[in-house]
Each structure stands twice: as C-alpha cells, then as structure tokens.
Length: 217
Image (cartoon, rainbow, N blue to C red; front, side, top):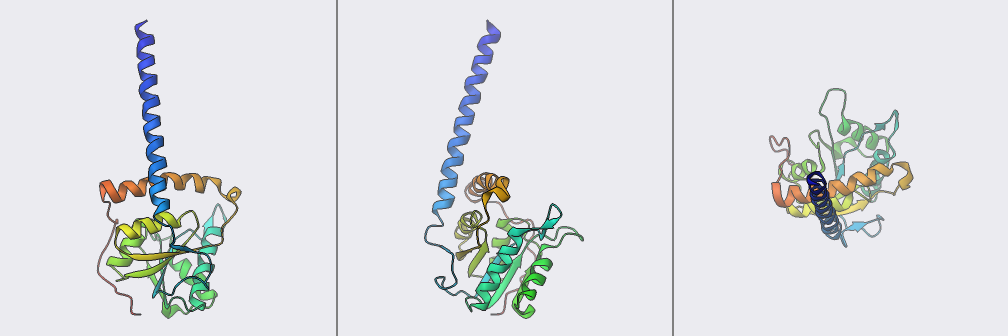
C-alpha cells in the first residue's frame, strides 16, 4: 500500500511539473513571437532601408548535402544588397574549429551572387543567435539593422535584439516546406523558451567579445 501511495505522489508531482513546463513553454513562445509583430518583411519593395544587414549563420553543408537554409539566407541578403536596402552585410557565424567556418562560406557565397567583398564584414564568433546580435552592437558598432534569417528563427532573433536595444527589423527568407526538416521547427520551440530565460533570468552574455571593429558605412 505504501508503495502505491508513493507511486501516486510521484505521478502527481510529475504531472504537475509537466503542466508547469508546458505552460512556461507556451507563454514564453507567445512572448517571443509577439515581440516580432510588425517587424518582419517578406519583400525588398516593402522593407525600409537600413545601414547593415545582419545575416545569421548556418552550415553550408548538412548531412553531406548543400544546406537549403544556408542558401536561402544568402539569397535573401544578396537581394537586399542589390535592391539598395543595405550598404554593408555583416555575416555572423560559427568558426569554432579550423575545419568549420560559417562566415567565410557565407562571404564566398555572397560574392558569387555579386555582392562586393569590400561590403561584407565577417564575424567569426557568432556561436549562437544571442552572440551574433550582441556582437553586432558591441563589437561592430551596429545600432540599426535588418536581420536576415528563416521565418521560424526571426521572432527569436528580433526578441533578443530588442532586449539589447538594437533597433532591428527582419527580412524573412523564402520558407522551406516543414517536411524538409521537421525537427528544426520543433527545436525552435525550445530555443525560444531558452532565449526568454537568457534575456530575463540568466542575462546570458556572448562566449567571446574582444576588441571593437566598427563597421565603416
């Protein structure tokens, strides 16, 4: 009988914890998504001009194949530049090892699309979305920008930017069918909740800052 009571209590506690976690996930996601209202654009015709496009990093190759998320971010950034909506493109990604270098791959891809290398700035320490956004402001002196990334990613990026007093709007890449990478969308739900914690509770900082390198507009 005692074992049954213990199991019952454990079940109640577990159910309570699951309910609390679910509620937090829903509310934090709602807060993050809501913060992007009116800030996301899907065409170069409607988006206002800003000095810099901040392109968030992605791996150029995934599972041995070209990464469609990577290419769509590059395509979107090139469209903004050629539409004269930005004058500089800041590519921020992970260069944590000698063999893994997102920013250099992003730069090369932009050059292939006709963006002059002189107008591309590389941030090699954009290990996370938060790192890329804080470094854009603190290291590269960006005060206003257009953040370029995927539809599911933009609300989180804009939420972090607002929390860091970086005036940003978002340019959404052409969405991919969710069946291409369903886990990416599931993972983003948790990432939004983590971003809420980073901003409001832990006040997380980038892994690395370093010396200032202001972008010359």
